[in-house]
Image (cartoon, rainbow, N blue to C red; front, top):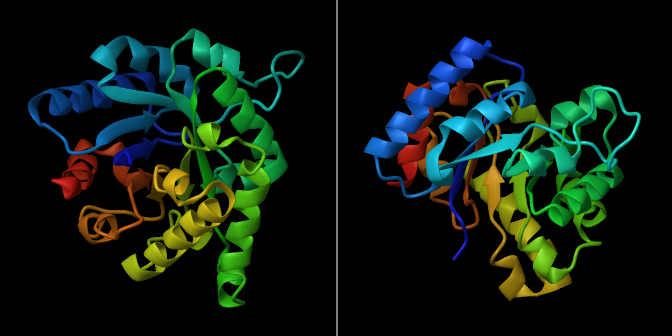
Amino acid sequence: MRRKIVAGNWKMNKSVIDAQQLMYQLLEYKKNNPTQCEVWIAPPSLYLMMAKDLFEKNEIGAFAQDMSEHESGAYTGEISAEMLESIEADGSLIGHSERRQYHGETDSHCNRKIKLALDKGLTPIYCNGETLEQRKSGQHFEVVKNQTEVALFTLTAEEIKKVVIAYEPVWAIGTGETATPEQAQEIHAHIRNILAEKYGKEVADEVSILYGGSVKPDNAKEIFSQPDIDGGLIGGAALKLEDFSKIIEAFN
């Protein structure tokens, strides 16, 4: 049975007081409302230790927004997999489109990060997806196929089952545009088929694939009802408990 997941990417938002308040609100909500999915958040790394201190019994997953491709060394500003392991973080986002766009991250970088994360027992959330130009020119299937193969195909079958994939069409991130449920399902099924060709259907059917791209309370249920969509990686709507909780309840 694939894991159902709603993960919130807070990006570069919230002061420490505001972050703590939202964490308390989320924890209180989780205690009082049985959920049909796992709930994860990726706050700024500065707040990860606070999240681990607040969240009891690992009821809410705490993830970094990025991690280094290097094990250690003179890499000012970077955070290693070992550091994340040492504070008992649950994992890290890897390859988010904003990291690719603003920091030149490639799928080869992602591959190295994913391997390091898995070696330390962390869960990588590997993000991929096409730009608007690539979709308009009909390249989206090939782009996503190439991203998946370069970043993931050095992994063993046992390793790939520990990876969560987040399909995020770049043209739908923070734009208010959203892929239709049918468009999202089409690519999710495509990714699962790519995995099945490499690792077999049984393994591919164990990999959770999330959709990210302007998921909101009013469209979450329809998106999550698609057969190959196992949840969402939520951006702006994760910054308010009212919106995030309604997205979580789309699985109820």
